Image 1: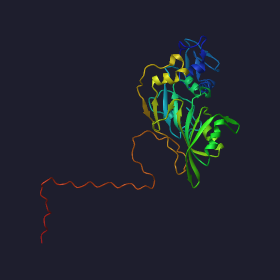
Image 2: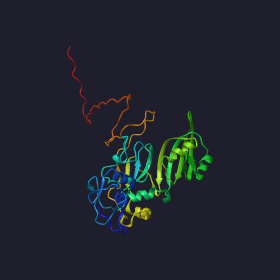
Image 3: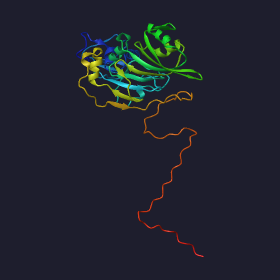
Image 4: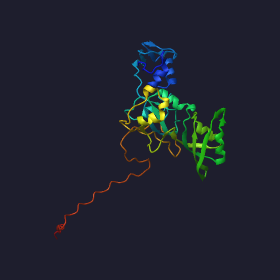
Length: 327
């Protein structure tokens, strides 16, 4: 990988250079360096405090890192049951293992929990991902949560002042009580929340602090991008013009995309199985993509094949009778 013309005089840090090229986030690249997986001009690096100069060659796992391409962004409808990581130590299925074929190497803008579904932004530009994640950028995240318990709109309005839960302070949250239905185990609520920080498990922890237990959580939007009608498991690339209009201020000038069209706007992958609604727990793996076919649960009766109807005689034909028996 050679440093591009937009590198500052004196080069740029190796982690930043590889992040811009979409290899991984800065934090992940630092871990790669600690593991001895990154080399500069053939010399294995032991610290990220190294600058890449014009003409230098960076390798990751022995392969030359490609020069940074124009920034690209995708909207992905993440299913419940996937980890937002490239490698899960517990062996759970991940987002990146189940993206559609043909996707380049991408990283996520922030994360969604294993059991959280909805909009996840993906990009090939690590620096852009970092910028969009920062609370100082001010991008709003909107969620819809289903929770069990009881709460008033007045109590939810208090979240606009922020709240501290177990020593962690969460900033302003706008929460709206959309629907409440009484049931045998208490009220089932639907709540829409808008926040700008996006700390780890923020929505779940904040709602638990006001006496609610979240049993379903979906992210509806992130900044200017909305989930919309994107089906579960689908990925849609954002057009270059939209990227220029909405994100140019956070992209290195040399990486701002040109043109107005994209070659493959929508791709699909097999969604992760949802939790069994009868409470039997999570599935252990994601189903492989296959043609849609009729399936039957254990105990269901399979329909018997229908008998083919007898062929009708042609119009005007005479009916024949079987011959009469003798005797």
